[in-house]
Amino acid sequence: MGNIDIVGTIIRFALLLPAIVFHEVAHGYVALALGDTTAKDAGRLSLNPIRHIDPWGTIMLPLLMTAMFGAGFGYAKPVPVNPYRFRGDRRMGMFLTGIAGPASNLLLAVFSGIVFRVLAPMSGTITYYVAYGAYLFALMNLVLMFFNLIPLPPLDGSRVLPLLLPDSAMEAYHKWERYGFFILIGVLWLVPSIFNVDPIGAYFDVTVYPILTLITGVGLGG
Image 1 (cartoon, rainbow, N blue to C red):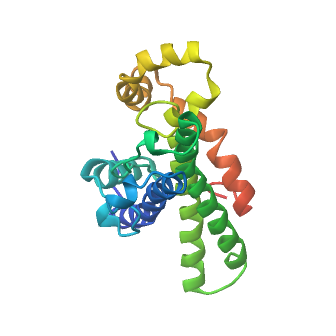
Image 2: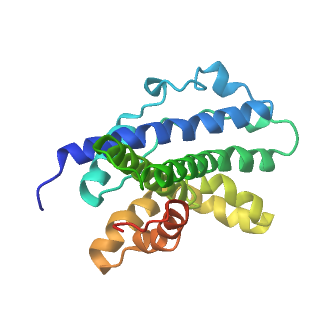
């Protein structure tokens, strides 16, 4: 293994942390708008990262992934949601709360892309680093967004998928839900190491990177 860029890893982690926090808070606010006060009652509508930190998902996993791959993903403590307190259809409510996190990351990525486009043509050392930070922030929000859209528990895609499946398919899906985390680990680590195939990388190639280029005007490494 080559030398790990400690400073670069810390900077990437520092940029990823607010993306994770906004992601979780978005879940809570949409749930609140639908009538569920569970997240509010638990104090999880705060932007204070301490309220959302999960030692493994928020700290260790993102640091490990950014050190290994240059960009990482992670998760905070899940915002508590009680679908039985939603007004209206519970399945739609779970869809809306589930999609809220990835949607917040898309908005942050677009905003960062605009900042990058404004600052990139300008000169100056500080401007350069701010523009570079905006570019990285856009990248990390897109990674977080599309990773969470994978339809495996505990990711947000598992909340989005039920709205798209008929009841008969949902029965089969629920049987596999309990194995979601283990399937995810297999896709992330076992499949690449055993078969020399990177399904997550291929997925990002057709999702994250084209959109990154669209919103920043620059491809990865461009």
